[in-house]
Length: 343
Image 1 (cartoon, rainbow, N blue to C red):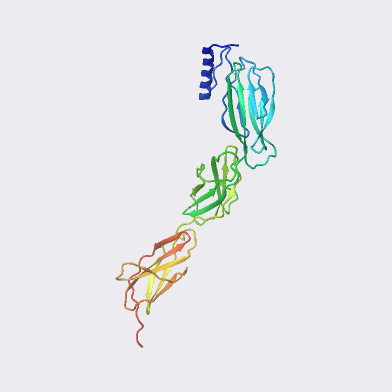
Image 2: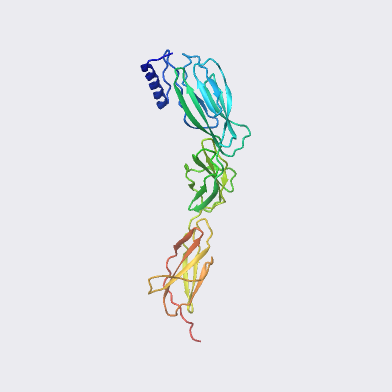
């Protein structure tokens, strides 16, 4: 059968418009059925149509032949009706998925192989579509067949009513790029995890806010690709916290070459235990304070020694926990060490 140049140009124009716009071309009496240009990536359980339906004109049957190189050929307008399955293998020759052809519907369906190991991989197949007027479209499709592996090095860093998580992407992405990560969390005392209110794309970190300082939490993270969701990885237990509040009620009492200090603990420790109190002092005539070296202590008192009798001093105290330092107490009133009276 021969066609004029105008007819061939018209058919090609309709096909290009249909492929570019993703819509079906309209069929008219005597016009050929336009094949679909498949390209890019597919995943397990995908089902695609290999032509634009036009059964009102043609009783469409496809002839599927399996070439030695894995080429699938679909010829439209043929009378024979063949259907079958072809395995899709990875570069090592391992079967990863089965490709099923439905000749009556003109569909290609990708199905997993029961019992196949979930160890990541992808395969590809090439196909060629021929119409009854000699047009031909060839394409290569990559099939991603596995969910990703687990993320690694999942580390939580506590903050004020929040926890920042970081991790390393899975070593095995399943043959498909990681699309996003799923973050879930729960209180250690709770049974069920809940979704974190964060949007995580391909970045390997997330900050979960709205937590309770001093409360222990569990966090889990999993990766997702075009095939599905990988296994969860667990982070160590973490407790969000903040720096403590400032100590209060500082009282100074003069002694012989020393001053005794007492104070009250902060109203809030920030959700983390106080690990030290830091005492600072200065002469009343100095501008800068000096830290008194009394080691690490959580006692609510200190004796500042090595002072000069008759010299006025000013004191202040601040608290410390794992999250940082508090503000200072109010400065003490000036106080002067004195020698004991002679007997």
